[in-house]
Length: 366
Image 1: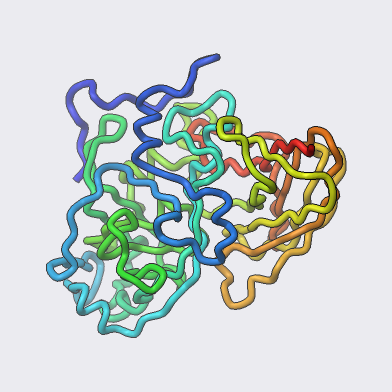
Image 2: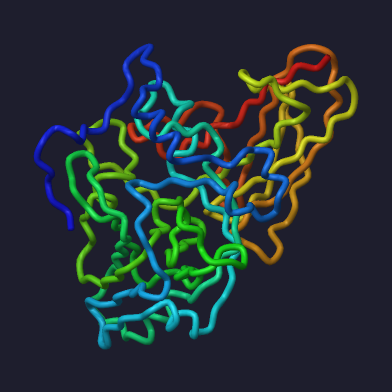
């Protein structure tokens, strides 16, 4: 359901004023959601408790034994499937790097007021489930079907609209889109969509609908809030904007040395330092990672690992740096096979989406 919500409890989207700090409402969101500590990039596959989490509303109750998925709409044979039915179908596993579309939002100026992500809204998991194409083939897609609409069990109010969380994908869906029931070899944790979620490799996290309970095939473009209002690239509130879809390229550095508790400034000793991290893109493999040890004055190439058998997962990279006493600003940037490169200036938009501005890490060598 989607309907206008009476009363003033749900404010419109806005941009922070000049000098406005992060408010208690944003801190409350930051307490409910969490990012992945950047040192956890040392893991090829992120442990579920360290993988980033964004929950729009509440984590709904979900009992695996009683969960039902309705598949209906422009189909020849509508289906209703339980988790046991889905587990009985041939399963595949995809290693997928997932990133929140708002990752980096809190670094923008002026700052869009929402979940205040810095850089940690990312993680990589092995998702196991049934290819969505197989289920739709069983149901028989009608010739006039143009989109699949996915509804989660989470329900709330956003910008004055009461709604279930709903998103759509154009048909035909990519072959690697999954109805996932397993994460890293175990049941989905509640915060990651137990007992069933959608996984859309290469797309930002808003497309990976959690607590999935309904798939409807429709003969016209879906105009729901999360599709037509939220998750759009806009410069002003008046324009309709372009939809947020695939993940822009990004490289991140595992912070070297050890940190100051409050500032997170890193401390390293003089001499050789191995720099390492991960890079990814929803548009293809990362083909180049560069790093700078002087705030962008000069750049050098890092060594990038091939994606191998996991085209939707992040790629490791490393480089050697000789640290000299003093203050340094380390930067890293990625370029993917499509030619997209991370920008050195912020790609501002009103929602704070797709901000893949290069990472800067302050380091004191002493």
